[in-house]
Length: 391
Ligand code: AMP
Ligand code: MG
Image (cartoon, rainbow, N blue to C red; front, top):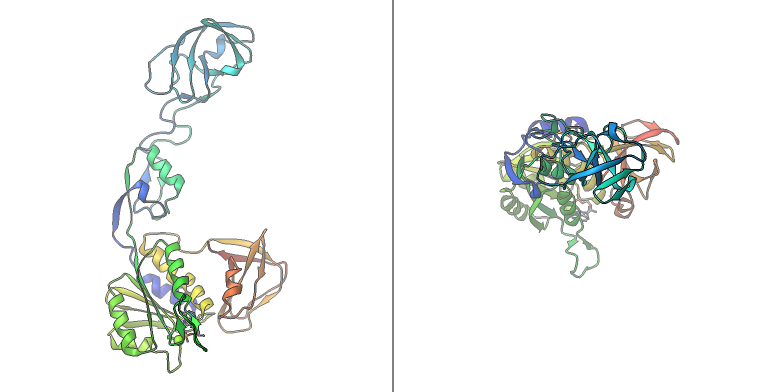
């Protein structure tokens, strides 16, 4: 049995990001930038009006002063107008500021009288002007390699005129569930059988990680069937096998992998739940063997599979988001493995939910966070713990 940290290091050290690809920015959402992006334009690109109103010289203005309106500048092409003292130019939000003007008076603060306006407010230099580059300077970094593309990132790239961008390639995955007792949802259950739920769990988790799930298969606990299914799945970047990695006579995944010439790099990790976790590879395909108990499959997916996928996709931040929270109960780990407690994070407080056993799927479904206690660690009510959260 190796430590969780060692297992994670072994898995991640062997992974290189997949080659990058160019995508239209509209398809890049949730991908990871494959290079740094710098601003090619300042934002705003030119001094412009923040209001519908009149471009003026602040020094010409005082309450009750009359100014002659000499032109109009809408948003769009710059008409290259000029404002002289005692004059004003009608202007609209986003329109370029005419030369000479150093302020905009909003239209609510003037009275229009034919081709004149009467100022009805104090006006200061710079008022209601958005200066060129005040938001973003040309050459400033706007996106770092490895950062995830969000809706707002896409908007920023569009504002820079970029139609497409380089992002990390997509990851293809296969899921293989094993177990004689398992029945597909929708089929009839015989006594002693249970519905197969890990494929649904893993498929959903993989989708959350932006992975293309290419194949989902179920196998009986038969070495040859498992081996054949592994061979069908091995053309993908990763294969996730659920169940059959423990020590019982019906746990045949390891044998099947060996027989097919796969290399097993890790088997058994000091993590609870999830001790029988297995990692290896067959050809180019990474193989993750997750224990069949749903909570074990879930925890080992988040701690080992998720970071591996993110690294393949070109991400630089591989950990789940963490939020500090106050514990509402004492937590202790008397065991010799790191223990992940499932619970709810609400209003800055963490409360374990349901039975903390590896089969307890209902409690897991009510949880939104994990608290890790190292072997021998205990935490008291009111102490602060880092809660790992997932979507
Ligand atoms: P195993 O890891 O194959 O020894 O399975 C451990 C436990 O998880 C057993 O109680 C299995 O019935 C259950 N289990 C295994 N695979 C699945 C699955 N795909 N869906 C739901 N439960 C499973
Ligand atoms: Mg089994």
